[in-house]
Image 1 (cartoon, rainbow, N blue to C red):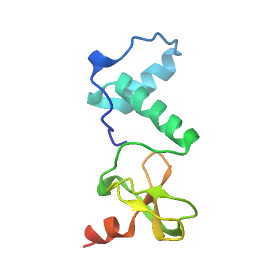
Image 2 (tube, rainbow, N blue to C red):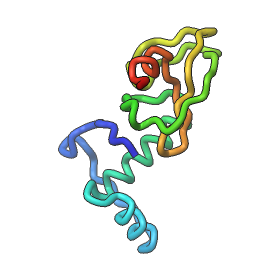
Image 3 (cartoon, rainbow, N blue to C red):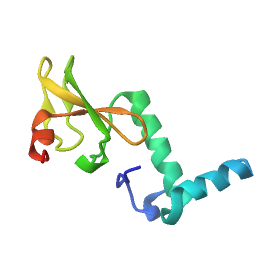
Length: 114
């Protein structure tokens, strides 16, 4: 899961949440060295972005697992370059490690092709 930089921990509010021990242990195992709280924040941000339909941040090209050709039905923004994608323009849908499909401009994919 890519790490999207959001805010310093000093700028965050403390929130208490109750988790089942098994869930917390599983999150710790998945998170590894980066820590399970950072993983929980990434999961929550991904959910918020998915529900709002407006992904924020950027991804690295190596974070994209697969691409699917597509045509933009509305204005989008490439999550690799930040470039605008106009309605009707050819683009790609990139599959993230979390299973989300995100807009990617063709120039981003072409600039990293072998």
